[in-house]
Length: 514
Length: 119
Image 1 (cartoon, chains in turn orange, blue):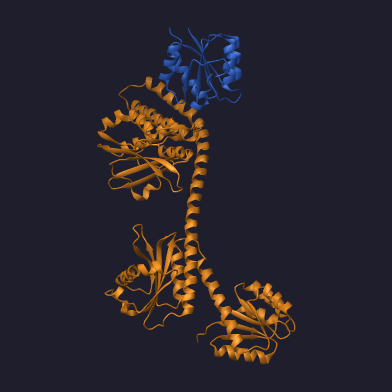
Image 2 (tube, chains in turn yellow, brown):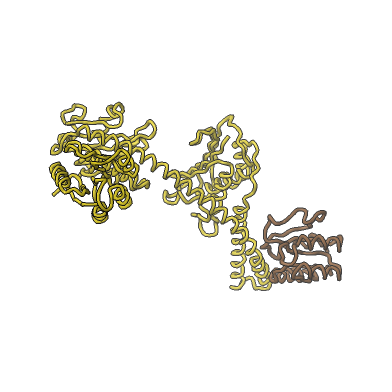
């Protein structure tokens, strides 16, 4: 049999136990009794209750002590204290110990019913809050929200729609909507309700949408008796929507439901804000870990390079000595040549490793980004020509100077340009754009982007291009350190570097604060 | 015959440098550390000193400074595993005549020595 809540009554007077039990059972609650504090505590230990009503003066363990013990076992359990001899003092003491409220004996059944209802209300609120805040992981949140919405508002269907970048709502998660067509119809309803949402505050109630001409022609609306729409806001913009619907078999939402919905909506909004902060925190942590890894790697690389160069020098020198005494057309000669070129490859890797590890001091001075780019282009103009690559300049005019290390910036752009060149072995166009911009924090920045017309970088690899030793170039062609060195340099300039890619090529953008 | 002293704690490096230069007509002697090198320099004159920087018993800079005082006019060549290690000047008032970063080949050391010690 279903009951509204599970209530424990702890009282040494049997007559009162019976009275309370009868009253509460009539109201639809399930009641369990205990005759003293210790027995009450044992009941709580054995079973889950929503509420306890407890006498203060009892033989054996008194009510105040039992309250403390019960709260230790189940801090969420609400306790109402009842006393015939209670002074204000003991009442206040019990409230301090976490009791929800107290009742003076003798009390009317209506008083009992009212305080029980309030206590259970609070319990429900705690349940909602606990459920919603049980996770800050963004991907677990929608499931919890929809489940809570269904349960708390006794709904037949509930869904979470999230606004995409273009502002259009798309279904994120739905419960009770069986087909994609139905989901699409509900979304349409939300869209048409847009103006009401804008005006409607925390909750918008729509009753019998089928009779409302605003929603005319949307399939399936006749099935809905009442719909609650809870907007999720990110600042001033609508970030999403929770729809909570009751079908014709259900009842209309009452004032109590609306109150709960409002509460629910504000808690969900809060939890989404938490999730967003959590995401930002994780990103920042990730960056810190990355920076830490870089610095450890740098130190390791520096020491390693030194240790390896000595034996490597021996391999190179001795190989060349033996080469001098080997017949040029013999297999040995070819093998030794391969050893020699392997050493050169190692040397190249170590050199880039060292330049990565060195973490030179950045000397900042006012620098024109356009000028740095021009200088860099002078350096690689010949190579670009050889590879049939056309350079398009879209330089912004009268850009402010940035505080930067000229040489290091050249290194960054040279690296990006070299990668762009290597991405287009059959030629293409590199477009270099500079402009004034603002970063997320509102700082004025100069941004320089280098776009190529190569095949682009697959999305799954895009996040790794700044990782050390990550390379898509054939073995021996790249060390995988170039872009991570660039990222390090840009970071030391308090700037940002990012990579985007599509089927028409890749774009690397460096932003530097003015 | 021009005399050269190669100082390096790495035997393999001493080995190939000596043989690369010996086959070009130089008289090359080896020292495995700073102390041994300075003893040899005190005992006899050399036309060039090829010296590693990072050695367990003594820093190469120290060896070169003392060698320069002991044998003024001797050519000084620094060999090292890391370009960022090379101080300029090598020691106060002492400038190296050449520097090679390991790994270097036999051609590089021959060319450098030949340019400093023309026949």
